[in-house]
Length: 117
Image (cartoon, rainbow, N blue to C red; front, side, top):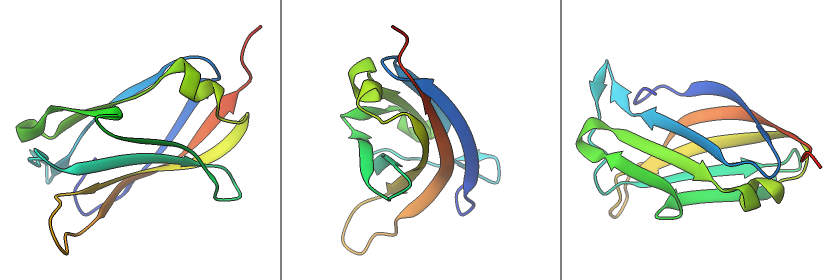
C-alpha cells in the first residue's frame, strides 16, 4: 500500500470462513507511522449497500503503528452474513483530528462464494 496512491486488490472468500489479510502503509518504500489512526474497511454490494464494516478494535488491528503494519479479520459469522456474489470494498484511513484528511488506500473486488454444506 502506498500513501497518496490507491492500490487495487482482488480477493475471494467462502461464506462462513474467516477472511484475514495484512497491509503495510508506505510512501516511497518508507513506512507511514499509523499509530492512533482511524482505519476502516467497508464491503458493499453492487447496489452500494454496506454488508461489512471493520474498524480499529472491531476487526482491524494496528499491529505495529510505527512500521505502518495493520491486520484485518472478518469472522466466519461476518462472512456468512455477506451475500454470495461480487462486491466492492475499500480501506480508508485518517490520522484523526479536526479537518483531518481521509486517505483511500485500497480499493478492490471481493468475490464471496457459497458456504459449503
